[in-house]
Amino acid sequence: MSFRSYLEEIKDLAVIKKPVSKKLEASAIINELFDKPVLFEKIKESDFKVAANIFPTKDSIANYFGCKVNELIPTITKAIEGPTKAEVIENAPCQEVEMPEVDLDKIPILFHCENDGGNYISSGVVVAKHPEQGQNLDFHRCMQIAKNKLVVRIVKKRNFDTFLQEQKTMPMAICIGNGANVLVAAATSVEIGQNELEIANTLGPLKVTKAKTFDAIIPAECEFVLEGTISLEEMHDEGPFIDLTETQDVVRQEPVFTVTKITHRKDAIWQALLPGKLEHKILMGMPREPTMFKKVNEAGVKCLDVNVNPGGCSWLHARIKIDKKNEEDGKKAIQGGFEGHKSCKHIFVYDKDIDIYNDEDSEWGMATRFQAERDFVMKDKEKGSSLDPSAEAGTKMTTKCGFDCTAPLETKGKSFGKAVFPKADLKKYLE
Ligand SMILES: Cc1cc2nc3c(=O)[nH]c(=O)nc-3n(C[C@H](O)[C@H](O)[C@H](O)COP(=O)(O)O)c2cc1C
Image (cartoon, rainbow, N blue to C red; front, side, top):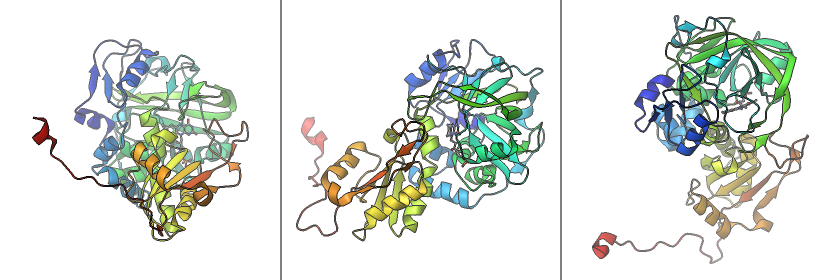
């Protein structure tokens, strides 16, 4: 389902008819609405509409995939392991209109927060092509620095960076206005060369088309496509901007993307995404859950669920629920979890009776079952997430640790289960 068809199906979509500025006003409203999807019909500085908060919860993503929230891990695993070819079409909706002259000022690229370095594209799916390795899809925030130029934040040593370091200058496309199939597929980390559009097609049928200026395949039903060339020869300050941890990221020198062609749908809708907020968190953390789930099982422990939870920035913390059969299962699950998500810093392992989506229940599990001397695992210092403000400045060295919050199998007469009270029908007593 395209982004546009999904928008039409959303029942609780807030529609803002009053003109709203792309500078600070739209982002303020999106933030106030928290997890409610919104459509801005009139943006003061642009002829295009803006939609935001379209996939801010796991429920919204599960709804799009047509599955239940507890089926997301198997659904994403199935797509990663069973990619399928998308239908290739001509005369794609995303290429209906070609802007006569490249002018990023005509597009409602939002200015989100007072200290930001500029207008930022935050929901753009970047399609890059390597002559031998094939295509890569991922996300890169892009700060507008001219009518035809954006500076692109590129985390080192990921697939896109590998492509660029090798080629120095390469064509790329930014596709904006995508359904959850493309967004989630782009957020997965798979083997270099695996075309994430095929993962997207397994998540939900997708139409694709040829890019206009280079030999790449792009989602045909997205809203906008910005094509051009990125080069290590032209660098520029990127930032400040809010990152996933909701803190302000440092300013770095990053490569410039020169846009040479902009195509869009006739009445295209810009997709905005608030940095650090729920939608960003869900898209970052959720694709790591299947990989952690798999590695815990491979470590010989029955994994029941994984929650890369928003309180841990949907990146630095994870809660793992296991069916404990042996005393060492908790520690093995911690090891497996770190294998499945290399940027994770703290892992908490729980028994099957703990609700790992409920903060209070998870804390209760830790309070009543965790003993530091016995259950704490600290790893040797290693390179951690580039996003963690607490990691060593410059090197990003960090100390990862795990908390085995499972109850011992041998209880020695102690009780670990929550007491169950008798039930009462309050209506009978309060009438
Ligand atoms: C909303 C969102 C924004 C992101 N922004 C960036 C970014 O600005 N730069 C970056 O390098 N990675 C960013 N990422 C993470 C990459 O997309 C992620 O590392 C990618 O899935 C890794 O892909 P790869 O394994 O193909 O290299 C972002 C992810 C999401 C979901």
